[in-house]
View 1: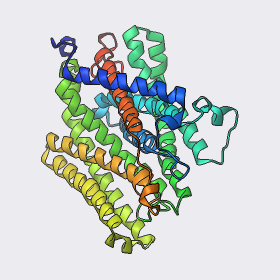
View 2: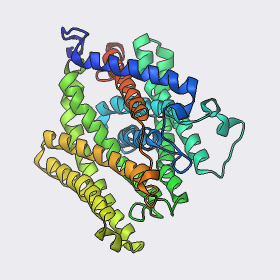
View 3: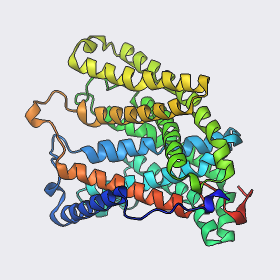
View 4: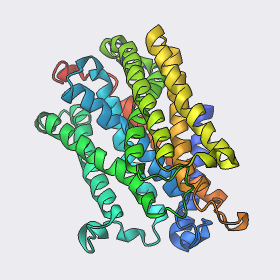
Length: 389
């Protein structure tokens, strides 16, 4: 089997050296944050209590981890078995994505040890944050169980593997429901600040926009990571994964094109319903047009052409633009267009420590993902469980 072949490479490659440096700096800043307080590493204020750790680590992290529920729903609920090889990589990415979102929250919370309080000691069921926290906690549990068969297969714990695998359909349904709730509720958080968020990004339909945009975000991450896996981890793939990869890429490209087109049109309907056309003639309007045309319509057309022409490379490039577009949208809502009326000296700009901690968290997540892909049967079937999926 091809996945048994390991390339002969030295461990201390330039990429691994850079990773070690980032992790060392990140660990030092982590010690500083948790010993000297959150104020020692951030530029957060009462006017800007949420910064890059919420805008990027949380909002972007949750959206880009949506490949888990979209892929499992396609395979197990809609019967698209031809995409089955993409399920485990997508679930792995989603599980690590949500796990590191929770990890990143520990940095942002002043009293990080109270993270479970809303679900245990002081529940607040009328709060958007309570709903988000509950759904994320439950969905992280669902993803952990969905991810676990790969671990049980490696350890050869057949009973646990059978038990976890038998719950696949139930967990998929539960995961889709939870994802629908918390993906949209993250947008609902910003419904509470109509005077702070610029009208071009504020809309009564923010919940719908967040949920709808998470679908192409998840699909694009599956395409993007699949492309990188074929380039750098081809030796870990079995024949099934290699054979099905083009179909996964082009099928997901077609779906992403459809959803991006729907999202693009609904955003303009939102502008029309709120009568915000006059804002398009301002500098903010120019930036909004850059987001909508450059990072929504352009990748939509790229995906459509890629699906029609069976061009996997174009689909891969479209996935990069889409992921950048999702990141841009979430940062626009949470940082750039938030508190847009404040004078520049009162606007939030993240400190270098905040940025470095974010880079540290992303690097740590990528490192754990690399270990999982190399050590667990994710890109190939375990020989003892072949055909048992």
